[in-house]
Image (cartoon, rainbow, N blue to C red; front, side, top):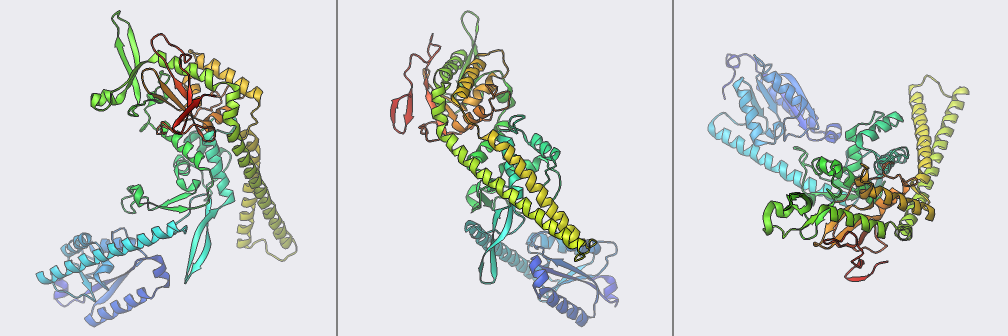
Length: 592
């Protein structure tokens, strides 16, 4: 590389000093920056160069060029004429730890007459020196990647042990010191009672609504939070992305995932590379998965609009029992010219018999058989009571926990109010100045804690009785009667919604058998929001879970229930011809 002609003519060389450390902690506590500065200034003085500028990078990696001071220096070096003739660094690794980018910027600088000089790795401009520099920078890149690999491995193990690796915690949590190991203080997450209640409210609205309306979407939740003046952690307003992140983050069910994305490209990493950190759960795993399933079922990437709004009764929940593929609509014409509609295996339609032998069932016969079976078997008040008994017991335990949380919120509000009163008394007695800025901040903080705690306590208290209903025999009878009527009402646009409140999956086993799969939790939500049978109008219709195991246990002590098989054949429009059974593991017993 050639020197600037003015420098060759005896004009004093102008130098820019570039100093960098990798982390902010080093910038504050380390001696590296003062030492770099001292050595660079001494080098320039020995060479007779004038130090025109200094660019300090406090805590930025050299693996990329996203560095503010670095970009400012490059901009000054590439002006016409350049602001200096040479950039001086302690070592080439201070400039870049990426061999390709290093060479790219060195050549770019050289075109404008600016050189890069390392005071610990002095090289010339001859081909041998260029080759040595490239080898050095290649080793710097290798060392950087090795260090990053070992650091990431240590951080993943730290997360597996339940300790926080840094960064801002998710809303609803706060960082606390857990233990000390040597000079390091290990930290973990604990639930922040105030913000955690906002998270629970968002999940509750997504699952069951607020009483005035049924389950809400992302935009409705964000709007409702803003209307009720519920603020984010920073005091801002809620948006769709913030609500979506809360509803999809596994942290809230007690499993915080670390190392989920590449820090440069932001591309998701394989699940095998994730490190799961156990944290206190704010919502139950069942509620989290139910919300995820609901969001997935409403996502047009996974569920076409025709599944949610189409006229066919079982579209989106009917699957082939042989291959697990969806059963989709097929039409055909008979010899008399009439048109026939079938549920047919989509795998066979795409791949032929090599993919699946395939099933095709007349649509009206399968629809009627499913409705008949739900009426005769599920919508029996005694059977509904047996299905709901244990689930209601668990809901009552949940309600007790919520009531304890209400007491905690009210206690926190009372404590904040007492502290405010003591501050006001101190001001009245002349012990504190009302103009003190820190005092104003403290008053605002305590007022916010008190008001938020009171609002959360009132909101929880108003919702507990509504979310933990008392299911009486009379209520079950009314629910069953209204559900039968709605399922038979072919003129109602909500018929499909009512069906999906009772069952989430139908598997066609053969041309004479089908299996109906549902969830007790979903059924309870329909009961809780029914209000005398109008559960669909109240919004108690939730999404389905498309990947349930077809042959899961179906006893009364699990959340999943597999209704008895349903049969139909030519001329058979009900399930009376088949004796239904419940599957209990590997054996069959008569249905209850």
